[in-house]
Length: 308
Image 1 (spheres, one colour):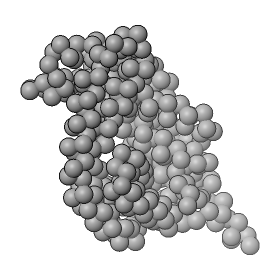
Image 2 (cartoon, rainbow, N blue to C red):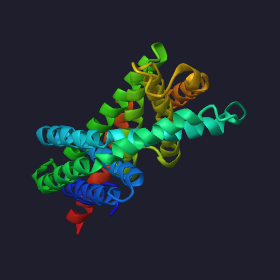
Image 3 (tube, one colour):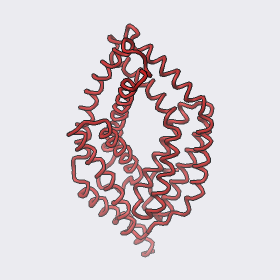
């Protein structure tokens, strides 16, 4: 099934269809995670992000439903965050080794990687309970999909979609401004979440977006990957500074600290430049263009039906 709103069909039915499809796929990935945790959990959390992005897009049309369901899937995702983060940190070590082959050739990152693998295995040991809770929550959410009720008239539907897109663009612009002025980990994390949501909104809106989306989608996805790598660097640095030296003594983490610092500087610079290109425009202006085009595209099928 397509992760795209069909402008020829009522908005409520389309959103219900996509919600049910994405939740169903999340459930399938949860079952797969029992055998292959890394792959299954990653795919499940991606589907949950898609669900939450859709709920944000249509939130103004049925705020009580969207708020409640968004919180539900936020909690489900949190249940699975620990094991997935453990895998991401191992991938970060491997990326650093690939990016700085000469510095890491002597195996200076190996002790940390071994500790992270042990940490991953410990988290996977208690995974069944988390998966069971996530499955139950998603099954209950699937039964609630039909409670969503939106306004389906073209002008009203267009305004709902424009409101949701504008809110995410505004969130991205605000996070970008803070990341440029402060550069804190939380600022880049907010920017990452907004970029990911915007990418999904581009997919959902398809040709309703006022400009061709292929190049923009490619740029947003690239930014999301960079911000994801930067987020993992921040998480790793926080672990290095945590009490108890969870990644090992100072002599075993010296190289890691050095490489993380270099990686953070490069990634932050690239992320800020790419985000400025994408989110430098006024969110209000972009939303107005979207609303105008969406009204025309959503009204066309109805006009054709009336003429017939």
